[in-house]
Image (cartoon, rainbow, N blue to C red; front, side):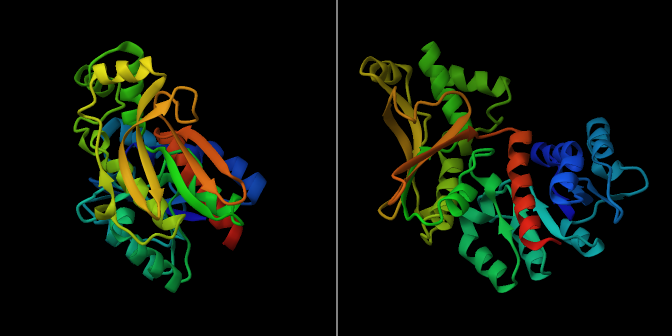
Amino acid sequence: MRICLMGFGAVGQGVAKVVSQKKDYLLKNYGMDLKIVAVTDSSGAAISQEGLDPELLLKVKLESGKVSDYPEMGVKAIDGLDVLDKVEYDCLVEVTPTNIEHGEPAKSLTIKAIKNKKDVVTSNKGHLALFFSELMDLSQENGVEFKFEASVGGAMPILNFAQETLPGNEIKSILGILNGTTNFILSRMTAEGSSYEHTLQESQQLGIAETDPTQDVEGIDAACKTVILANAILGIDCTLKDVQVTGISRITSEAIDLAKKDGYLIKLMAEVSPDSLNVSPRLVREDSPYAVDGTLNMATLKTDLADDVTVVGKGAGSIETASAILSDLVNIWKSKKI
């Protein structure tokens, strides 16, 4: 399988590491020869129809910060859409930064690949939260696979789990923790009695929170994931504007202490149901499945046959997210045997 990798930040580099690490395993277990034939970043691209060396890609990126410096095969200042025209590939792996204003460049890259009858795997939330129905309809019209396990919960297997492991169940609602940064902050505030401001600064120093943490702490990231789950699992046609959102920036250490005295924790919870699309801080019992610490994500799926089913996993990390991307690639391979 030849993949075109759009984006070479933390997740894109994670994909390259996983491809290098799992190459022999995939060939032995699935007969799958996974090749990266193009990679892009803001500097340009590296393109080789014979396949790029993932380890050399990572070395070049580390040393110069530019994949376009890849020896002999680097191309300066080329647009991602043009790269898709220059290389023969089977699947677009789209891991550009999330854009919740207009979903670009992910939207245009995805549409172009789908119209060219190519499968698409993405970790991006922006275009899914804004244009889910349009993109899914387009993929079905063109007979291609469009998968996005990595867009919700990093390594936590929720989308494929719901669709492939529980296909006979009606999933009535989902309630969970879908943002690792806010869960880390609230967990630290609970354990240390520290203020929100101090804990946010600490999480930024550790690289867990972004320099601009707005999308995480104000609940926007979790709201995007709420939209994806609502559409993909519950069949609710919605976009980001349909989610009621309250973040954690007003949570005080005093509020957390009061909750603890009564045996409760404060968590940023996402609720997905036909009656409610909501992201907000809530009280959860200390002995409940929602009492997960650190950057862990979790979700409880309420079903008609299996009752409540809970999944837990690391919600962030380049390798963890890349593992979800790899699962989508393997599933596409198994279904199509390219």
